[in-house]
Image (cartoon, rainbow, N blue to C red):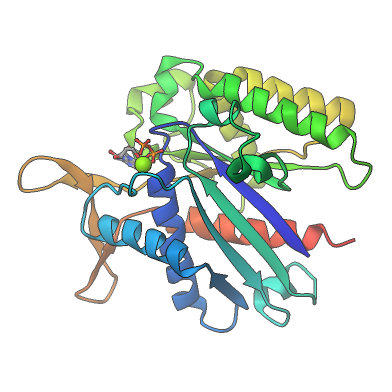
Length: 289
Ligand SMILES: Nc1nc2c(ncn2[C@@H]2O[C@H](COP(=O)(O)OP(=O)(O)OP(=O)(O)O)[C@@H](O)[C@H]2O)c(=O)[nH]1
Ligand SMILES: [Mg+2]
């Protein structure tokens, strides 16, 4: 079974950093689990080069950027049969997940959907939306309208399709380290998000952010889930690279010492990315009929 996943966000939502962290998590996950997980990462050389470029910038404590003209970054995962991920989700078959990360602002993408490079954008099984959590105090974000128009187009396209109509939506709240502590107090929520294992609490926690930043999208998903049983309940991940000051006083990605070693590694939310990789494995196996 092949699961198609599209990742979308607006300018400044953290798409480039997300791409680098996802790549880093893939490397870290493979290093930690070795052959046992059955997880393999594939991409065309030009795509690997782009992802490694971002990864290297982050590891050099620089905020990453992509060369002009990169519109999309694609890679795929294979969860081979016999690996613990396939076993965990009770499926013997090997599954593939194809991930396309769109670098164009979602607010513009909605108007360009006829362009060949974007044709596939609406035709995914899983839609991952990146939201800059540090925008929280400003109320609804411009991407709210764009997410809604984009999802309506998907619903329209699906209407003619008589097959499996259910879709999954994942929200990744980026720059989680940049939220002012007072904002959490205002919202009466903890500054520490629930753990990966606490599924229901995480949805509740994530929806508090959505209610503030993307109220239209939240209402749209709820209406469609109820009326047309189209969207399953959204899953939330909370991403950040912690930051610190460099010698010149600039805010840059922070490194931390690896436990029991003299080496340093990037201080990012590895567990959240591992959670996302496992979540996609689970969704891929859940779709085998
Ligand atoms: N503290 C902190 N800052 C972040 C994080 N992610 C991104 N940033 C900041 O946000 C800026 C934009 O992030 P990008 O990853 O480039 O976002 P993008 O969606 O690619 O946006 P553009 O390239 O600006 O169109 C970065 O240059 C950083 O300054 C994070 O996890 N923590
Ligand atoms: Mg960028």
